[in-house]
Image 1 (spheres, one colour):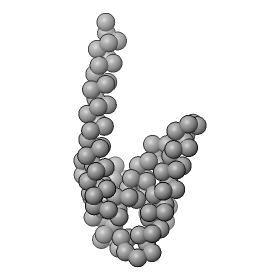
Image 2 (tube, one colour):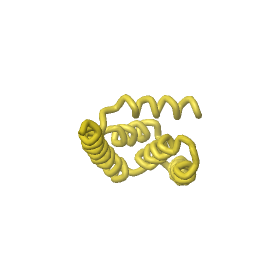
Image 3 (tube, rainbow, N blue to C red):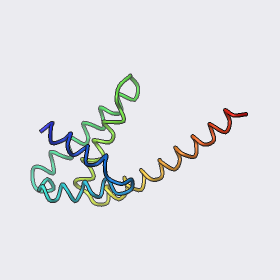
Image 4 (cartoon, rainbow, N blue to C red):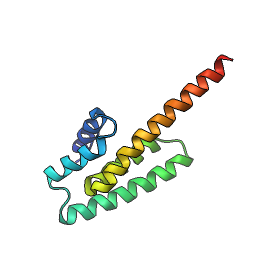
Length: 109
């Protein structure tokens, strides 16, 4: 199961920004993850990984990885969550690039 999760995260990493979570939703549908007990298990795992991410924000650790994993699990179950996460990714990338540009301009002064 861990190997499969690593492979899915690698596929998500290679997807275009703004389409990662929608593509994960489609892949999960093809795998049959969105039905029955698997849906409940995915949602439970999403909650647990998000909680771990929140804890790791306050202590040293890879919180970002757990938030991405939690988002992927949510996106695999709900199309609306996949669309929202894809939009959030684009917005966060733009904000990051803007702040980076401002920071470098300020450093040059």
